[in-house]
Length: 161
Image (cartoon, rainbow, N blue to C red):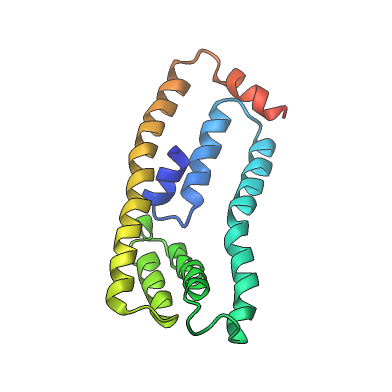
């Protein structure tokens, strides 16, 4: 959760959370090689749904198989494409992601006012929950690393899996 909060609040396009996680795991005694392998795998696994959605839906939209009144698939595709705005290094992607989402939704048929309202509500929940829970998790993480006599022992079992 602390990694997620960092990704939400720090304008690094997702790299901040990975850096925080690597720092905590390294401080806990996990090897740099193991951290790199696990972090890369986690990034690929969590990015796969968006990548697969674009690969699967784009051809269907291009040949107009899902155009017109089938509003769900163009909106899903618009959402995924709009999320690319989150790669712009702004705190929480505010501006980049919101603008990308609104633009993509309007492009695929939503009205500007509905798209803007939906994105504002969505981003409030998407940014608020991880920020609150992540701040709590970060405080707990710091306390655990500070107070544990051997934080490496906690991470040792994970490294062997």
